[in-house]
Length: 376
Image 1 (cartoon, rainbow, N blue to C red):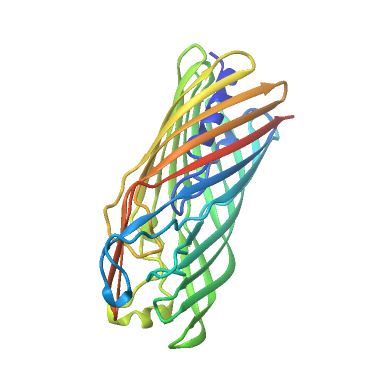
Image 2: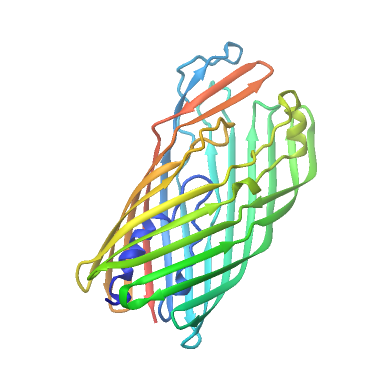
């Protein structure tokens, strides 16, 4: 069977499974375009509509919180756009440019009258990756540089009206990978490594107790390994999947003033050092005719069952996605839909006035995405 007959089913399902992740990991850092055939340009636009709510499960009378009070929705909707371009230089050499937003966060505890009211966090990133590939028979090696910008703002009113603004920093990392392909059975296996990228800031911190100060802060986005695979199982049908390991133990943010202000609780990190995560996805793609192809996916990330602060409100997930692609001549249009079911998360804060905890449960997100690809 020819890979070109069914590849768009895979692309459609990837929008529904790994093009938009959960939590801080936004894009999945796909490099699949470097392994495409010929010259192609593609744009993916996604709308993510999470709903994360919970209830306070421990009372703190001095804080005006009673057990059972609801938190309200703490996660605003957001949009994401990524773009890719591949050019074949020779029969065996190609280049690609990929622009995406690999990491991000948008959180706001907006319900009034509660301890966490006004807690906000926003992380923005943009990355442009330039890749060069060399094919040798069925094997391909590729690599290149990633230019990434990252900024973080946050406010934690119950810690002396604390706020922080890092501004934006741009730093370089690199990407290396290799793949094996056997087109006659639609077999493709690719392994890609993304380095961690360190960002150094002069941050501005403000608080009622310490005023406004500037200080140095370093934050690293995690290194990761992506394993992507597909293989035909019958005519015009294939199974595919991915495994992504992200090393969040490399990521932590401990601003100096925030650590001082939380000294009574042992000196806290604003962004606690994470635990490495592994995300799995598997799917089935089917070419229906010369125009239409479809695919369905299932994704999973194990929860860590750890109590966190109010900037981390979900723990693991499972997801179900569906994609359909319409192909006409050199243009293909794909619509993907994914439902993410988040794992429950307990958040807890200790202040001089008492202890407050909330359990975020039964939460989900709906992702819709549109992908347009043009071969030339």
